[in-house]
Image 1 (tube, helix red, strand yellow):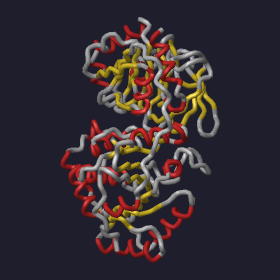
Image 2 (cartoon, one colour):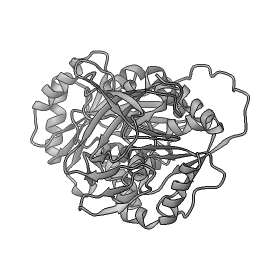
Image 3 (cartoon, one colour):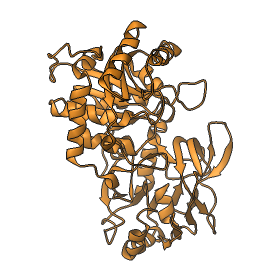
Length: 465
């Protein structure tokens, strides 16, 4: 039988539960199940801390809506083990339940044969029990063979329960539960039926961002009701009780200088930022001042630096082009010596023009003489390690950072200036990357500043000067 609820005595004030919700493969439904659990636990009164394994920006925005607090990325390859431990402990210090959603399949990683960058590596490093999501459509006793393989593939990973998704009927769920029990495997903690309304719209190998998807509160309430109906939540929480994580001692604060104001683009077109990156910028000495390139007519006052993050400028190209005052303000800021950093979508926006997926071309900022064109196929995907070629906002030549690249557009060079850095992919191949034009730096790579803690400090120092 599906595991019954066996405890009702978990106190939100005194206990801590934490687990990694992973899956056998992408598309198994782990994000929907994560959201259902988060909202159900929130409605029960638990203080939550969601996390997302890997470099994904979009899933965490859904986590935030479900849980009521920002979701933190955890990535052992991109951030390093010490930073993953610190981010997990710092964000979860006041939580009753920490829910870590995995990336892709449990053992999918930076490269075959290594765990770095995988959900499994986060679970290993943080000593997190794993709840394995299995898409069980068309499956019966074979679930036991599948789960047994995952349990035995790496003994450092502790799978303590299974959730079956896309289950055809209650009888189907009972068959799956019995197959696991007879094989002496972790119990079935839930069997979710096929409900089309619970699905999430996708784009470019991921979800459509929450700001465009805009799922209603009623939708989240339906997910929570589904979790309460189909999942043994109390049993799950009992299986994943853990000691509360503790942080390493924090060094004494450096003497504070007056903060430097940094304009941060944040709206429907630009919203791909790692919370840890923004925290590091604040701790380094920046005051982050948000503005909308779509609707604001000018940059915030008295800013020394501008950060244009990733997003989907191609979706909002008409609105961005129509805001001539903002485009002119960014041109003036760059020409006047303001420190500008553009990342992926921000890189595209800094260019001369952008052609969207319908073939329509719109003017952009013209700070860089490049033209961005959306293509029908993926142009780049994967982890990157960059090494700066010259002194830059991130520090001296030779500064090394890690990040992730994922885009369907190409930037035609025009008269783009020299590369900003050398970049290395997972196969060790090196290519020039990014561009620099005086005080303007841009590239397609989404960097994580945990890979080089000095980068944020150097950026503040450069802005002060």
